Length: 359
Image (cartoon, rainbow, N blue to C red):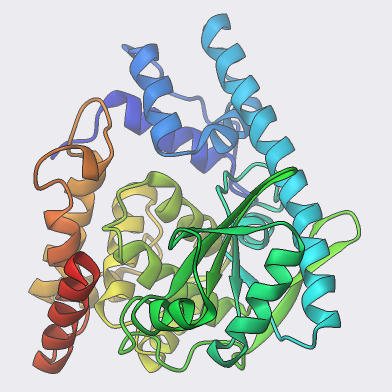
């Protein structure tokens, strides 16, 4: 499946937002359907990155399009600033309650990948707590005005404990001020992926706004997590692989090799190979790593996973949510069976998907 001109321009713009990228390279906008371009970047939730890339490259886009993207980027920045303040309050509350907590994706990833937490779109605040502290964590959220959206209220502590035994997260929202928290008790859908990654993993503190510092995973562990997270949705949004490529862009070829080795120790499985090959196809992140590229692509399963993800990402001219068309999520579910090679994983994954769909 070829990459459309509009998606190719989106990728060019995002690349120009990477830290240290030579933004003097002109963007190729010849023959662009600007209406489709706007639809694409909104679907992939990369308006902030695209606007940063356009500004860095000094590219001239039609005034109407420029106004739309700039307005979207401003909204993303304002939303992220509110999320930073909400995260600060939650960190304080969890600390006072004696509940260890870690933030991941979202604001912390925006700072690490782009040097600016405000340009990366983030719908929610992702929090990780120990499952043993789930009832106390829920009390903290309720005191801040959050209510359970998934599963829907009313929900008891026993029901939430049962929910989290089979799922990695619940979703909590409030309306004033508007905020959404995804409360995680583990980092992967399958307990066989990243089984030892969690609150006791190496961490770092990242400043996401003036005076707001949040704890998150160290780079090695973060890379493994991002690979599994992207694979769980077949990378159908460009922003996920773009974040990973931006992180890799900061490092050396040797560091990429180390990240891959560590991901295998953490049992990210083939998700890491899929992520590296997809990132290379879109952003050339293995250009200085020919040996690693050859090693990964020589495995037929890795190559198939990368092609399937690329097709999921580029498969339709005008983007639609996978859930909005018949069998739209079939490839996503199929990919998940191949992230680890053993039959035990496939059996457990079948049981997990069946339980999620019908339980």
